[in-house]
Length: 68
Image (cartoon, rainbow, N blue to C red; front, side):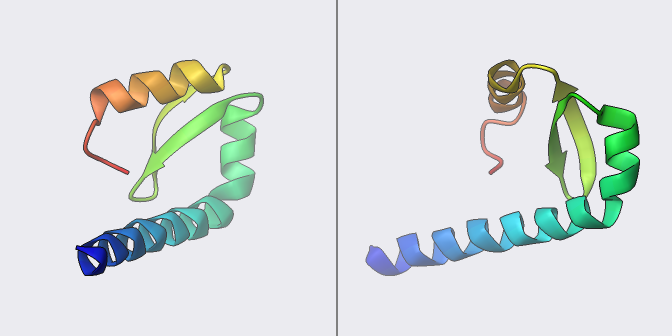
């Protein structure tokens, strides 16, 4: 079981790194469009935004329960 957990953690960490690269590449455009907002990105695309971080988090978890 530890091997599976390690593998899943590596997959999740890899996704976070890819999303971070997408975010950095789009930073100026995102700042222009979403200043003062928190954003949720998936596969390089903004899928939702909100001024309240917790509200955004809860909405995203509800819409996409199985996506990290």
